[in-house]
Image (cartoon, rainbow, N blue to C red; front, side, top):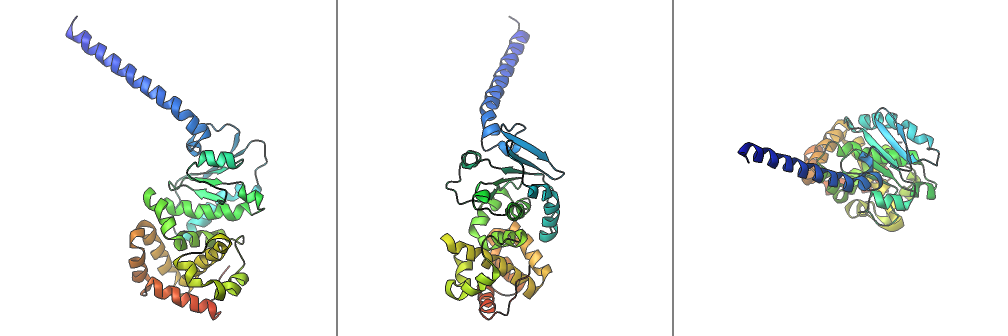
Length: 282
């Protein structure tokens, strides 16, 4: 047997092994793409129809009519870019989950049924859960909320986008509630009424749990509105951009932007709420 024949045979066997491994990988990934966590990036999505928009696509249960709110997503992305002063250049897939079983299959790391929407740290995928319809909530509010997370995530590392939302909910959730123009949590009148009892600074420093979490969402939103009104929009935007990119430096960046510590600003905001000298904007 010649040396040339041996070399060709080895190459042929390597190619066969490589193609076989690729085939196994594709067969294994198929269910993950069609029925599991990879569905936002899958070209096939059994049981779900697809609405193609210019800057997004929506996957929704084939047997149901799509709520009209989802046809405004291109407009909301543009509004989100203006609100955050950031370009959302990545196309976003929004999956309107048929039921909780589908949601937990698409996002198996999430347990329970407390989530209304979920944005992935990649910045290009959003899940909307059955909770919206169960509680008769506004789809538009929660889609806008999640679009805020997605736009910010597109301008941060995946690690930062995943961890910072848990470390600094007043920052990420506050922006999302503000942009979402959300009324689902509680009214401003109720927030001001309950502020003396629940503690505005407590909501910002530790957050409340259970039903009182609704109070925290409004406190976070209003704190950012307060910073905007007190220190100027340009300062707030510059801070948001830097803090989103460098969350580990959150409090250093805060002092640099506003010339006051975060704790001092929180105390000043609480005083303004209790004295009714701060008026939230729509």
